[in-house]
Image (cartoon, rainbow, N blue to C red; front, side, top):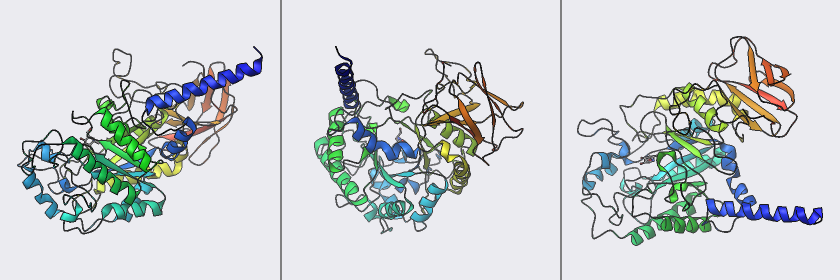
Length: 476
Ligand code: FHN
């Protein structure tokens, strides 16, 4: 067979495989080639860092009920509050200090490129003036539209406005698993009627606020099925072909690990929750770790267990080194304020991102394999994965022709060895201050000579400009 037809045959085979792969990850998607899928995901893949906002009438009790102070957005369920009593919180919800511009500034000052805010959490309360129910912001003294104000400010600031929407709805008479304490529900649950109601509300949200992402949640209960997820995904993507939808629209998510298991899957990216996977998932598999800043998603006035800026920045580097996004949560008060400890930490993260964001935004995963960071995990599980959160000494991210080293533990002798790097390093410098770094290519890789002191107490970044577009690395 002549070479040319052979190449054509190979190209055709590759295209068929690629289309099949895309079809498998979003089997219900309107027809979309890999190129069109990449174009749709592009802004999200470049963004890397977003703000999650859990805000609703549950911020009124602020985590406390009958002496228990460990509640938050689940308080209706966790305290089994009769829905008729829970509805009174709406009459007390009047966030007069809400300032969308200030919230967006907190996000952009942190280096965040998108905001995902709860339009409706499991309590069913709509944070916008819905025409389909009175169980929404219309029934509060706060006669404004916070989603309108926030989406407008996001647009002005050039960041993406996105919405979290719970499939499960503890308030609706039609949600399939009715709670005993739902003393306002009428008749018997009807999931077809509920799905039509939810689709109607989602149509309001997509048409009025044009979210970049619909972040579904609350999909785990049995009334929601894979088939309903596929139908909803298809309905929404037809409504807005640019819309990105996470994997919780379907039923394939393997618990808090967040990635799809099995064949019946739908949605555009995986959603690990409160955890960072031990490694990435290879090219074309998108994922985003979501995390609280303290121990609660919704506001809890007693929760002062705040993550340090060091933990947040190390998490951000670790997640980016594995090819993921980081969605970090704030839980505003019923007055409309983001807690000051959240603002303070995010400001410190933003100062780091201002100098080092080049290593994170639009970056690719480490070329050295997920465990090449001299981590010291206390033990490994049966698959050999680190069982407890490993302590990383350094991480790496990439761009065409570049490797970024995010160094957490500064070498005392000034020597930083990179085993296995075969690519020729044309030059290297510290992102902070652009000070040149001496590079020696050795038989086993590359050795850097670093200044005595790190440029940053949390993570100092060295950029290596390499001859190859993609780093050539021998097995680590
Ligand atoms: O039940 C929710 C919880 O309230 C919160 O919204 C998180 C954030 O992703 N998701 C669910 C718990 O997995």
